[in-house]
Amino acid sequence: MFSIYSTHGIIPQPGYRQRMKVKYLHNWNITPKLAIEIQYELQKRISFKNSPNKVHLIAGADASFSKAKELIHGAVSIFSFPEMELIESKTATLPLSFPYIPGLLSFREGPVLLECFRQIKNIPDIILFDGQGIMHPRKMGIATHLGILLDKSTIGCAKSYLYGEFMPPANSKGSFEYVRDKNKKIIGACLRTRKDVKPMFVSIGNKISLSKASDIVLRCTKKYRIPELLRYAHRFAGEVK
View (cartoon, rainbow, N blue to C red):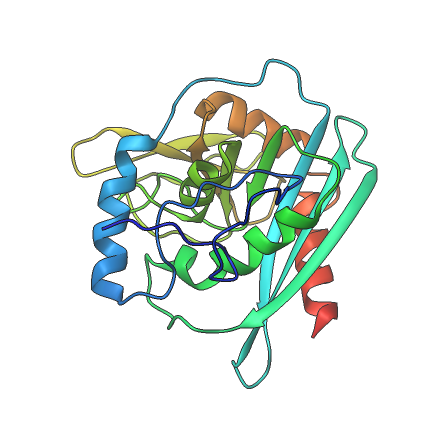
């Protein structure tokens, strides 16, 4: 099923160097049916190890679309941690080639975000994605999928619910309720990042624990509901349009 494939569709040549390594595990130019098969295959590669021990740089990644839905614009912003000072930002634009299908977001946004990561000079210890991690019907939200391809600790931090069962958390910052799958297994947290605002949905992407993921999200959230680095990446991707 899997084939070597870069974000440009070109196999890297000898001597080619990347600032961030990307595992080329599958083709991106595929059908939705094959995309689902790939998600099931990638489940075997999810790591729940709680790493790294020390966090100095953290990234936020998001994408935006042209008005005609012909182009997709990606943005990755690198911040120091815990100071939350902007270190670097990169953007990329690619033709939009995959349709909107719930549960297959990574096949729509993944290529352009990987192109952004290829450009950055300051490699982050942890990456936050505006989307799901394992809180997904096939445990393969964009944070998990790209976390595997980048071999990085990643966190899914979504504004809306996709999958699982939960109770609303108390109305105070830091309050949370676990989100569980149909087998009652914990797959994420419904986390209140501020009082009197809707909660965020936090889940493991790759190579991190849920408790650490939730702590990172709270420490990156200042005045608003959404973590600062995701707000910046969203705004930056929108400005590219």
